[in-house]
Amino acid sequence: MTDEREGKPSASGFSRLALCSGSWNLESTLPPQEANKYMQLGSDVHSVLAGLKDFELLSQEGQDIATRCLSEFSDMIRQLDLGERTKEIVEERYWYNDLFSGAIDRIDFFGEETAVVTDYKTGRVAQSGAAENYQLRAYAVLVKKAFPKLKTVFVAIIQPLAAGKTIAEYNEAELSQAEEEIVGIVNASQKHDAPRTPSTDACKWCRAKDICPDRHENAKARTKELTVISGAMVKVLSNAELVSIDDNAGVVEDFISEVRTELKNRLLAGAEIAGRSLTKGRTSRNVPDAASAYNALSGVLKSDEFLACTKVSVTALEKAVAKAKGIKAKDAKQSLDDALGWLIESKEGEPSIRRDK
Image (cartoon, rainbow, N blue to C red; front, top):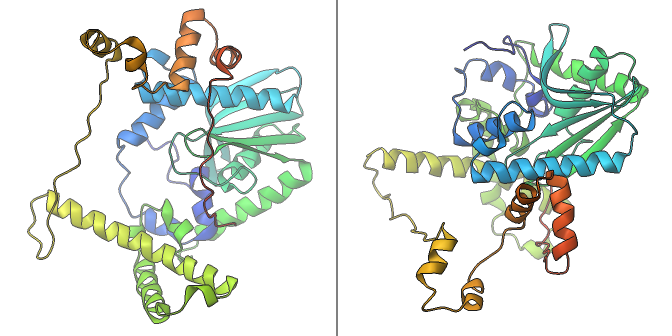
């Protein structure tokens, strides 16, 4: 398979390189990553969003993700209100000389001086927001270099399964600062003695974390620190002490999670490990064909009794309305809101703790 990155750093890994410049050299020793089902789903959704694959060929999950991405994108363009769109480019890789590159999902131009760069994330793990995201910062630099007349570049990350959408704006001065920063990150990662600085965020997306000696030693050190303070009364700790312990715990928790995953994989492969065995997996039951179930139970349950046992997917309804009316996803969303707005229930989950950059 041809490596379109040509063995050079790609913008998609810059958030990691900014935290651990030495991770590039270690990752470079690994063979190419094999696609798994989640990567394939993301690739398929991106192909549909780029107009390279038919929507109907996606799985139900893929269609839901694509529909939500398109809806978020339409809302964003309407929100920015930049006037007439003059050009759009999808799925194009851009280069900064021969130093690094980035494959950009979508660029929309509004005249010669303004562009909107959009990056779709189809996973369930939230990425950092547009303003803090080094991948998008690198995209802004690449687009400015490719189209020098630009004076304003908006960057947006759309991640419907994780954190919705966020937008950041770069003016010419900020683009110049971003260029200096991004080039500095890449140059630092290319040094043969670039230091490895493992942390929860740095290791999250690193393919070399399992073979990283620094990460292993770091996890052992953090475990010892946590053991020493494990007898402390949490309520009397200061805010700074709580944050420090939480940082240490994150590294150890990630390490323990991988240890347990490896134990499970070995047991599944037939290994006999003293003190460990596999339990039976949980069995789930569902009815994928609601219409057939309704017909089979028509003599037992009344229609309202049957409907009381079902759950309606708003996303599925939007797709059905779009297909029935022959309209776009964003129009179907508005149509459904107009028809069922008073019936659609929105719930906000409990807040979670975020590690601010």
